[in-house]
Length: 303
Ligand SMILES: [Zn+2]
Ligand SMILES: [Zn+2]
Image 1 (cartoon, rainbow, N blue to C red):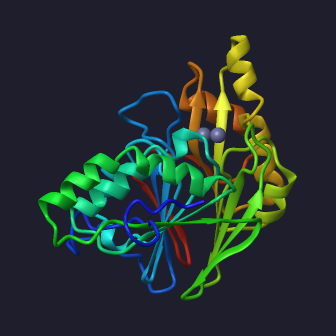
Image 2 (spheres, rainbow, N blue to C red):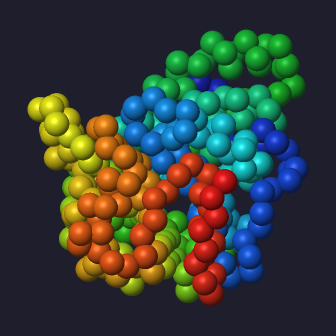
């Protein structure tokens, strides 16, 4: 399933920024830092890049989805690509994967030496191979120019629901969510007694609610404002604010925060007002580069 245009198995990662400054370390050794790198949708926006969330604790730095502009946002938070070892894809819609070739090729050009481990649903290996094939000429020419350079590599792991990663006390669990493409996953991250759930792209989901019971942070997608037939069809694959509010009211996260906003002419305020009709707990609107620090308290910093 995995093509190896260059010797060995394919992998990706790296270090556009060497080991230089990292934004801000988590507040204490047991806290978890969640950065909403991209909170947008397929709609082009300079304010909201494609879906992409960074979860950091200790020495672990995991990327969930790699939507449009993800590499730019990583540069803004000064994350050394060399230290990015694992990417987890919620599903294979392109708005969640556009940045993979960017990370793969440009990261390598800028000094990455390690492979990137890409975890995702069935089809991830084939998709990644096809993406990489498209930049074969670029890589071949650069290898001819610098023959001493080691070829880049990636490794795709196609996952099933269940625990998909365990390292340094961090555990990542994938669970099925209902969407317009299958499989589609949400993820739960557990570490140091902290818990974060990412909804992925989903309709209202009881499975999500079960996995998000009492978590510290629930990052949830949302759709709102559809008026045309096509927009209503798209809406059927996602979660309306009132439905998300029901999810929050049932799962009772300490903090609910929206990301991956699919808004057809609606505003952030419209989304929050609709949510408030059914949910009175702590809920916030995510923006690109919002940092959520999950320690003894949960703080939200905006750029
Ligand atoms: Zn999708
Ligand atoms: Zn999406």
